Every structure is written in C-alpha cells, then in structure tokens.
Image 1 (cartoon, helix red, strand yellow):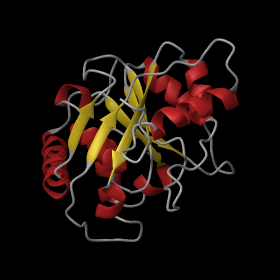
Image 2: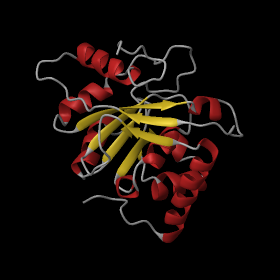
Image 3: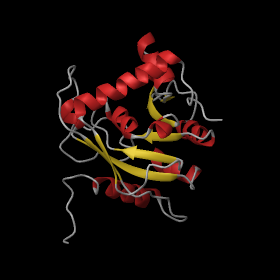
Length: 219
C-alpha cells in the first residue's frame, strides 16, 4: 500500500502553497530529457546544495507522481518542532533517516528498500550533505549502491538541480528570485558484477553530465 496518496485537507493546502511558492520564487522548469514523467517506480538521485533541493524536484513532478514520491531526509531536522513534523510527515510524507550511527535503530538502506516495497518512489542525495565547495559534486556515499543492489529492478534516475544554491544559499533566510531548472537524465541500473566504486563513478558521471557546465560532445 502506498502511503501519502490521500492527504488531509490542511496538508493538501500546505502542499499546494509550497508548490506555488517554489514556482513563484524560482520559476522552476522540469526538463525530462532521459525519462518521461510516467508512473514507473524510481529512485531520483540529485545533487545537493540547498535545503530546498528536494522541494524543487518534488515540485516539478506531475501531481500524480508527487503523491507517491517520498524525499529521504534527516530525521533530526524534520522532527525538530511541530511545524517541521507536520510538513515533513503530513505534506511531504518524508522518509526520515537518523544520520547518527550512535542513536540509529534502523538500517537506512533497509528503510528505503521497505518504502520501495510499499510502492513509493524516492528522492535521495547520495552526497549525504550539502555541497558548499566549488566542486560540482562531493564524493557519493555508498548507500545508493547498496540500495541499487537491494532493489535492482528499480530505475535510478540522475537529477541535476541548477541554480537553487544561489536562490537559497547555505545560511540564507530570504530566497533570492532566480530561474532554476531540474533536469532528469536517463535511468541507470547496477550491473550484475559491477563493483561499488565502478557503479558510484558511473552514477556520478551521469549526474555531472546533466549540468549545464558539463562539456558536451561535438555535434
């Protein structure tokens, strides 16, 4: 059973307000260059430079996909205060992960696999934290590989979020209106004998290849 398809009215209104606000501030445009926005179950893996990253990916999905797509987010952030708990749980139906191994009671990969088994698609950030460096991406953590191994039939779709780090930079409180794009690339699957390092290198290259700054082959 997929959770989150039917939201209570307050959560549904809040979701609509978030989508309208995100579109008003960023004029965000979804570019589906490697997939079509259909009902295929997917793991969307994206670059991470701002608190608003998953909101933008979620916003550009059609409503029918938005209702079954769960962002994977930090439990300590989304459980801090009643408003965040309401938005995280009731609006986004976020899959909350305890990032502290000392207090963690569930395996994050098992949590994500269970959500996939329930019919959800996921939005994940394999860098593990926001990238505030000049490098296009931080090294990917191993969770994406282990999740791909655990559910090899699920499509892994690279998603490049462009410009949002300038709209809502780390430490900023007031968004700066700028145009953003969210580009969805061709899906990946882990190879039967593919090593962790090889797969993560391939996934990294697929994501960087969607960046507007990536070098394009000559036409």
